[in-house]
Length: 317
Ligand SMILES: O=C(O)CCC(=O)C(=O)O
Image 1 (tube, protein in one colour):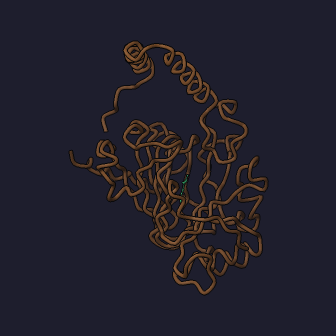
Image 2 (cartoon, rainbow, N blue to C red):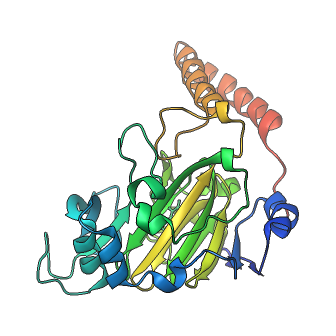
Image 3 (tube, helix red, strand yellow):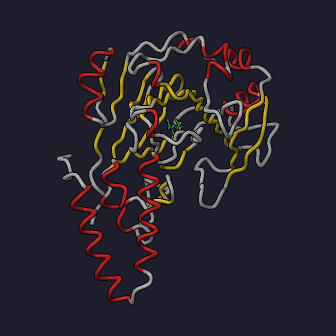
């Protein structure tokens, strides 16, 4: 079987709040929004300006000797740098100061002040820079969850993963390729928690991951100033085509009490889903008390019941 044909993510030009809420959002599919006002950041955020405004504040960053970060074999380390030093290094390809190698790659996913408890919020950690970035008014202010810097060396690729909240990824400077997969293709992605074990989405190891051919890939290249709407549960994999600065904004689109309160990253399963998964583990434990032929019989009946009760028909893609 061949890989599925790629689908281009649709590009909407000049979408305002009304167009977003009435035409883009209800489809719950990724969309590139071009020409939305992100504020002065698009013109101002040169490396020199970022170094000056971000200053000495320390940031914890991913550093790896190769641009494709691998969460399975942990081919990266975490290091702490002053923001201005991080920006300088991430924007150059050969470094005179380095941790691992002179061509190492850098990635910042900014964090909250209390890393384990608080989500990242640009206006708290980087107040001077936050003034330049205008969050598009595409959701109600009380739904806001976090705003996260995503700053990458040229070539840096972040593994395929999903988040549980709706997301606007603003690519402020630099071009970035994003590959997405529908939640309906989750079973073809070899999940390990919220991440896919298929690291190389362009040349996947099909001996190890034969089901991956069934996953339909959605592609886009973000230009500076673009926004990408990533609905909750849609898998995404990013590759910086240039040194670039992004900010992503998560918001709670489910009722606030659906989410785990101790989730600074916005990637813990909603409480009801976590409960359902725990209950399933208990049910499987109960089946373990039976001989294999009974487990098989009742297991199949459970699968059928779950399928009938929860699955929506595959949408026409
Ligand atoms: O832009 C990136 O590097 C990653 C973005 C991402 O993972 C997100 O917006 O959730």
